[in-house]
Image (cartoon, rainbow, N blue to C red; front, side, top):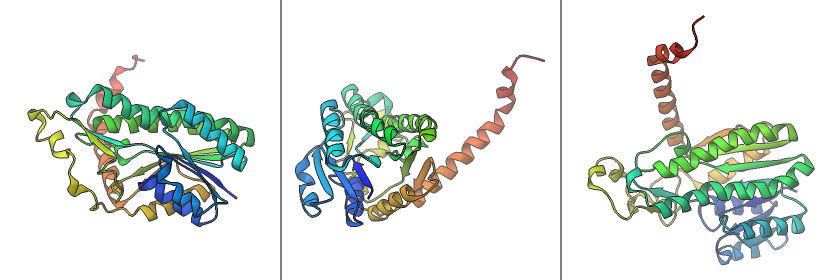
Length: 275
């Protein structure tokens, strides 16, 4: 039986995935900063669910949660680093404390959980690590520079991690969702408090709007099934795009990059030593 360890299960992707893996009969360590939000879900699966409090920015809670998972289920087969949130601001508008907290959650928290889980996976020479990125991890949406930067960091780390772990029998997958009908645009999305008028037509157009929540094309239940399917695959991809909007944006970004490479190739190749 597969044992999952999923961060950020109170709502959204984490909740949908936790419900799906428990429904199919797998074990799941489900975590949230407020464990009260997941106790009811765990109570419906008393033999296979373990609900734990986990703020990924607190090292003591990370260590304790992984230890309890190992004690209860004998090891973690699949780690899903889902905990995170968004932040919108023009780069100049970004508030230092908010930006640092964003990176502590979206990047450094992910790193801490991964480092605590890896010794067990290495000992067993098996496991899968699923890191939640975003379409913003491939593109740089205006007004979301700091969020994109946190996800670019996850992408860069994951690419190296995959190469380090592949010889040890451990797989790494980065998931890049587009817009899904979660609460990401609600309580999970912060923004700078002091807008600057000069950015009204750029970053200002991305400022949080309640109308965004509930109109996204993606279905969280289908997201959860896609994660289950990719984990079950014998050869999962490094990067998994989810959503037609994510696919369209990525194709446009790649086409733009190809055009720019061609336009500046003469300068690119001009910098080598002659001869």
